[in-house]
Length: 388
Image 1 (cartoon, rainbow, N blue to C red):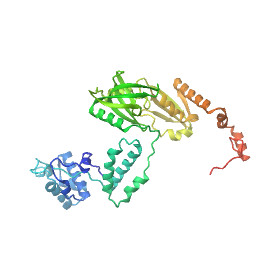
Image 2 (cartoon, helix red, strand yellow):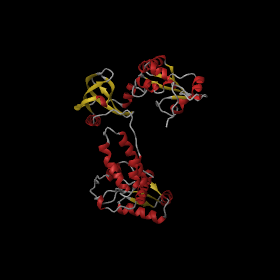
Image 3 (tube, rainbow, N blue to C red):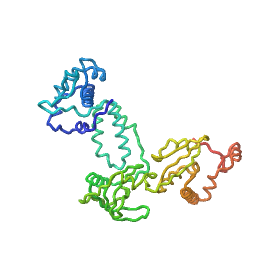
Image 4 (cartoon, rainbow, N blue to C red):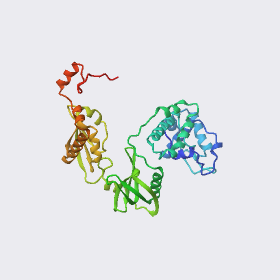
């Protein structure tokens, strides 16, 4: 099924035609014919001239059906369609007198409406901060009405699709809206910014360039007029944001990418290094299917283990991802990254305490098997327990 152009969505959601035609009074044909009319229109626009037999073959309809469709285009929608006897094909001529040629607004099949409703439900689940929900709710209502009040599939989607956001930080809706307006209006922003790294606040004046949604959180790439360079700001760390009357400084997105670089995750920069990580065969069953970076390189080894190489600039986020795999990953390089991961692991071990380390340290394989045969836990000193 073809999804119609997005401009038609606004028409179907209630905008009146610019020529004043009252769509509510128009008797629309069935959905299949509307789809064919769009396809005929697209064929003629793309090719200039189309023969009757070509349209009939591509639409897979009878001669009578195609003639009715062509008549509908010409008489009902005032399409300037005409038959060119010299080439033996149909084409668009000059516009006819009367209302402007305009096809109906957005139409969906039940399957398409269900697919869109599913995507909307996912968006709504991801948008737990309520930033987009109020603006897309009319679309959800419209899709539900397209399915009909007696259609249970749409209602089931609302119950059966669940997306659980992870580690999402709350962004105040009013600050998000201010940033969005300034971005679109190309105006500067002023706000108080909390730097978590320094645990301090500062006043910033920024020309917004691009909003970035990464790992369930929103960031702003902008030209910082206080530091005279491109900086990245986390929206959840902004306070008292306000749009200024001063025009924003325009920086090409190519330059933004060059300045911030293509490093790992949100910690980007120009001075890139390549991390080389060796994952155990157990961890490789997951990691080799994951996308850590668009430019990553991976190699599956004969023993089932996996070597992953990713570029990075700042290491904090990469270190956190490495620590998720703990004993199942070895940092082969660079040495500075390997040392940083080792420091974090040692700090975590100290935080756990000696008793926790002693409990988690596995006994030799033979000793563990001997304890199991005696009905004891392979780690603890008491009897083995069933989990159920």
